[in-house]
Image 1 (cartoon, rainbow, N blue to C red):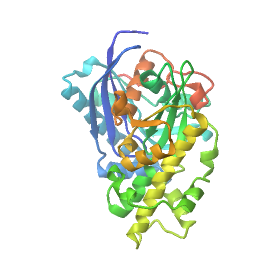
Image 2 (tube, rainbow, N blue to C red):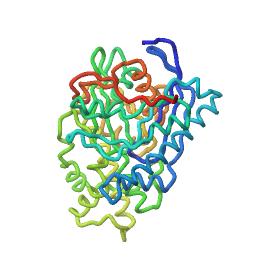
Image 3 (spheres, rainbow, N blue to C red):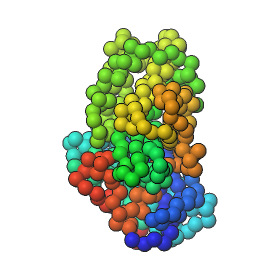
Image 4 (cartoon, one colour):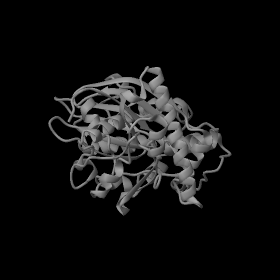
Length: 377
C-alpha cells in the first residue's frame, strides 16, 4: 500500500435525487485534505427518469441505459469543474470513486442496482474510475449498505467517547463510532424522500427549504404512531432500505389508512400537518435507532441534505436530550461533502487493495475490497 498522498475525486448522487456532489481530495493512509467541492442539480428530465426507474415500468432496460449515459455526462461535468477550479490536470488524479444512482436495492434477493456508465465516465474524463461498490459486499452475504462507517471512523472517530454520525439523504443511516472497536451502522428509515415528495406535490418546490413549510404544521400523533408500525423499524441490524419501500406508494397507503389522499389537499393547513408528521417520522426513526443502539453517545454529527433542514434538526435535538446534535460543518467537513468524500476514500481503498466494507455493519462474511476498476487507458 502506497502511503504517498494522491488526488482522488468522489462523486455521489443519492436517493434524495437532488443532484450530484463531487469532491477533490488529497489523501494517503493517514492524511486527508479536501481541495474542492462542486454540486449540480439533475436536469429535470434526468431526475424524472431516475425517479421512474425506482419502480417497475415499461421498457426499463432501454430507459435505464439512457439514464446511465446521461448520468455519466453529469458526473463528467462535475469532474471537469473540480479540476478547472483547482487547476488540476486529469492525469494528476489517480481515480474517481463514482457511486452511481441506486434504483433498486434488494439484498435479501442478492442484488443491488446503481445505474452508472463508468466506462463512458472514464472515456469522458481521461481518469480511472472505480464504481459498483455495493455488489461485492452483497455477493459476500451483506446488505451492501451502509458503506460509509469505515470512512466516518477515520474522519470523526474519537479516542475517548462514542460518537454517532447521521447521514440524512433520501434515506437516513447512522454510524456508531466507539473507541477501540469496529464501527457499527445501519439504515434508520426515510430521511428526505417522503418529505420531498409531499412538498413537491403541494408546493411545486423540490424540497422544503430550511423546513419552513413543514414547521408551520402540527404533528398528528396517531398518524405518526401508525407510521412507526412499519416492520422495517423493528428489524435488528444489519439492515438497509431505500425507495423500494419508502416511496410514493407507501405514502399513499399510509394516508389512505387515515382517510386522506396524496392528491392536492383542499385544506392547505392539513397538507402542512402531513409534512410536519413526516418530518417527525424521520426524526423519531433516527433517534430511536440511536437510543436503542448508542445511548451512551455524547455527540451526534449530522451530514447530508437533512442537515440543512432546520425543522428536522430541531426535532432531532428534542428527541435526543443530553446529546450534542450538530452539522458536520462544526467538525471540519461540510454536511454536503461527506458522502462524496466517502466514495473518494472508497476509491483510494480499492486502488490500495484495502477492504472498504465493515462486516459488523453489513453482515458480509468478511472484509472485501469493493468496486470495479475502469481504466482510462
